[in-house]
Image (cartoon, rainbow, N blue to C red; front, side, top):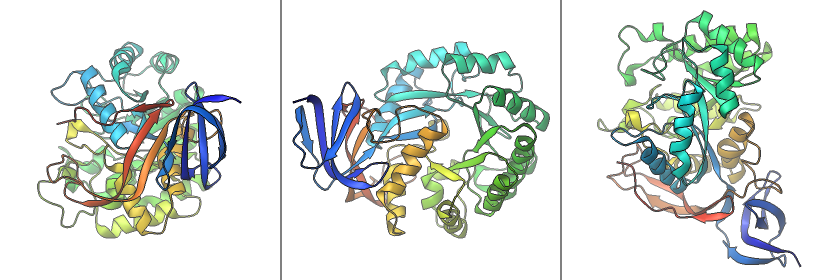
Length: 409
C-alpha cells in the first residue's frame, strides 16, 4: 500500500467541484490523492478535522509588505506570520510603497532575498513607472514577477508616480507583448485635485474617471487589466461595458470595502487611511450586488494589507469576508473562489489556489462556525468586532506551519 507523508480529513473539503467530505493525501509537498472521507490511506501523519472546513490556502494579491521602522527581511517575516494567521499561504507582494520599490530586476532580487525567511510562498508584482523601458519590464518578468502594477494617482507614491494616458497606453502595449496582466490603481489624479484631498474625502468620480482612462487604453492595445482595488459600486456598469466592447478587464476588491461602511466609523480607525476610501453603506450594499452578479468582473478579493499607510488587515480579512458572506447565504466555495482560485488563475500561478491532485498542498483548517472577537487593541480596522470563522491550522507545501510568533506593530 502506498504510504503518504500525511493525510488531512474533513467533512467539508472545498474542492473545485464541490464542498465534500474527503481525505486529502499529501506527498512531497503536493496533493497526491483526494479520496473518500473514510478511505483507508496509509500515512505517517493523519489529521481528522471533523466539521472544521479545509480550504485551499488564500493567494493575497497586492500585499503591502514593508513595515515602517523595520528592515525588509524582518518585514517579510512579520507579514508571513500575519498571512498564516489569516489563512494566506501565498503573498503576492506589491511593488510599492517599499524600500526599494520593485521597478527593475536588481530591486526585485533584493526583495527575493529578503523574502527567503517568510513562512509562506511569496510572489512579486513589478512596478511600472514613467521611466520603465521595454527592457526593464522584460527583465522583471524574466527575473520572476508574476504581473505588473501601476497607478493613475498616488497609489504607489512616492515610488511610482501617476502615469499619463500616453504612458499608460505604451506600457500596456509592452505588457501585452509579454502576455502579462497589469494591475491598475485607477483613481484619476486630476479628479483628486492638487494637492490631493484627504484619503477619506476622495470622491467616487476619481475612480470612474480612472476606469474610463484604463478602458480606453486597453481597448486600443488589447492588454489584460485588473483594477485593484475597485470600490465605487456605481462604476460596475463600466466593468460590464468593457467586456461588451472586447476589453479584457476584471477587478479586485477588499473585505473592508464589503464589510465596513463609512458612516459611524471610529475617528481613530486606521480604515480612514484607505485609498480609495471606505464608502457609504449604500455603496457597500451595491458593491456586494456587483460582486454577486452573474458573470461579475469583480473576480478577486484580497486583504488590502498596507502597513505603510497603517492598514494591518491580513490576519482578519478571511474571517471578515466570511462573516459578511455567510450572512448573505453564501458558502465556503464562494469564499475559496474569491480568495484562492481566482487570484491564482489571474496570475497563472501553477499549483496554487485549489485542493486537487497535482496542486501544492497549501491547506487551511478554517473553523467556519466559530465566533471570535477581535481584540480592541488590534491595529486592524476590525478591532473590537465580533467575526465568524477563524483559522485553526495551516499547511504550506504539506508542512504544518506555526501560526504564532511576533506580530506587526
